[in-house]
Length: 224
Image: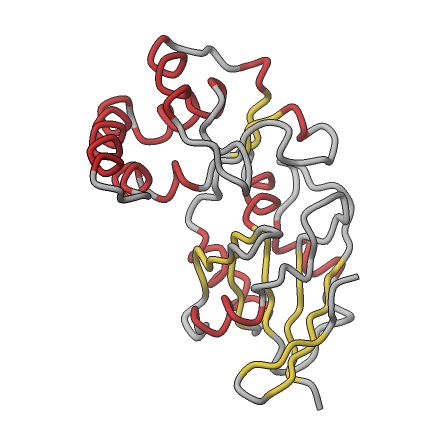
């Protein structure tokens, strides 16, 4: 069981995962927060939203069966390195989604720069060139929740605007987070009063989990 509390700079914070129904493209993340979290929220709380569920509500889950895999994707996925935190673009389907998102020329340039970087022992150049939307793509089988285990999950669009929309309506600072179970924690967009460094510290151990918990929302609260 993950710890509910975490200490940041000598101050304790409580993390409260909020369980919801399985989200779909027919849901609005603001409505979901109001339905499942409104009774729990207190003055001064911060709302954290997981990036994949946010993307799902935007219709960004693409069934593999609906993808037309092009020649470029069939070639390039083989050159993506194996990483311990997931498949990423090391699958024809997720590589095709990256090409669809940012364009074939940008992906080709990213592959070229990434190959040069590897020659000098530098990692990460592919994604630095390909951009955040390519980096946020989760391959099929990443999610254990049906029907999304058979979908490639693209990153959410305009996460900072979504976070600000939620703050403007509900009055709580809000952000979207990309977190995994092995220490990866990045804020990908937040409302105007959010502190990126703080959020990446307070959520670093992934208190929402990465399995079938159905907890796409987490409330962060300073402990008394």
